[in-house]
Image 1 (tube, rainbow, N blue to C red):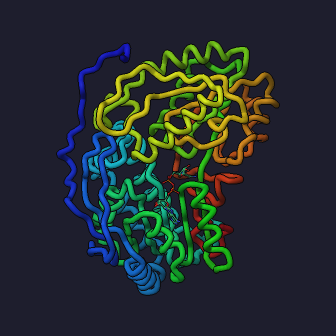
Image 2: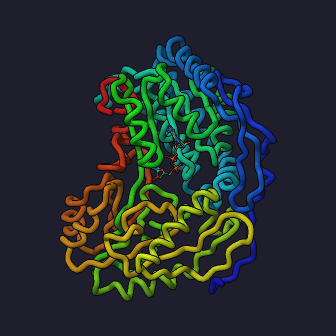
Image 3: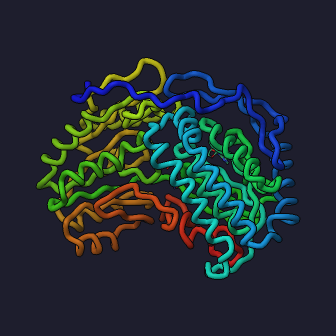
Length: 478
Ligand code: NAD
């Protein structure tokens, strides 16, 4: 039981209108799919929310042809300043409908409303505003002004709308058209985004949304009419995609998994560091590719940090994602919950010591209490594999070089955090970390102007900022 008691403060579900069934968004219209359908559920309650069409190969072909036609006839030839107007319009509608989008995201994904309302949706709007600004300034991008063509984009379930924005906004700004597939457990906000495209009068075929699972994703990636593949998801599927497009002319960007080190030195401001550790791993239930899932704490302060951390974890409010007080929501799916449980059990079997925050979990839905492991060694699977849940592994170090060595001892290289009072130490350590993003005295900060992406098995290519244009212009690298 939390030491604080709060009266429930539920956000209204009535602001969203969830339909019983959804078709595919192709050529500006919702159309039935030719294939099967699947159900999307609320992970906090296991309630079935809607029946959603599963796009088959013929649907993918239809969508790619619509995207090609729109690229050739309308969107490709359109001057950048005109494209910008559509992107600004989409950004403004996202702001106008932000409450609806946030509630729907929390219902379909399980994330707390305070995160979807204050982080996801504002960052989505900011992304569209930012890339709208680039559309008529591409000659200053450094990558030329020529778009690539039709982009096939496949995204995961942890930030459904935000990953959509990261993919769609730069692609459209550069003059490409898109066929996008949301993840099978979180299709609803992408379908609401399709409605927003209609509301913005976006020309038909510029954005096509195909719902479905891995097979649909594979059909998009392998379709010969797709010129560019943009994928965010697991390293395993990323490798399969890299193999599938090898030997073709398709360009590829891959944003994959991570196992970030959050490094706390003995001179770190303790209260801020503890908040940063909590934010690093429990934000979005730990379903974050750049989550600070490995805490590296300097031995001399390890005991103090752990004591404070446990006390802080005990105050996290776990429960109803639509309650405005909730800090940690539901695990996104039964499958993901099973993976988190399995790896945590392995952690214990390997000899690490498990501690979970004392909290009452709801009886239906998918839940996992905020958990940490101490006594973790580098060889343990919980220290090496991505858990993608609210589970922190704690390791200690004595010297900065040992911290760097341990932080880099991973096949991933997406992000890292450094907590210290010394600016010179931040620069010295950050320069040695093989990670695409390094935060200092903060964590999980995202801004559309700042490029994001990985090294090693975390993928290649960058999203966000000027660098994010490279993936969607012929003169770019990716
Ligand atoms: P996943 O790879 O299983 O699925 C991602 C998407 O790919 C889904 O839409 C899925 O339907 C689709 N897919 C599955 N098989 C496919 C195939 N053979 N061909 C084409 N598409 C296919 O990943 P997930 O479990 O949904 O997401 C979690 C993973 O995503 C984690 O590893 C996380 O680190 C990673 N992620 C990375 C970033 C980043 O920016 N680097 C951001 C968010 C998530």
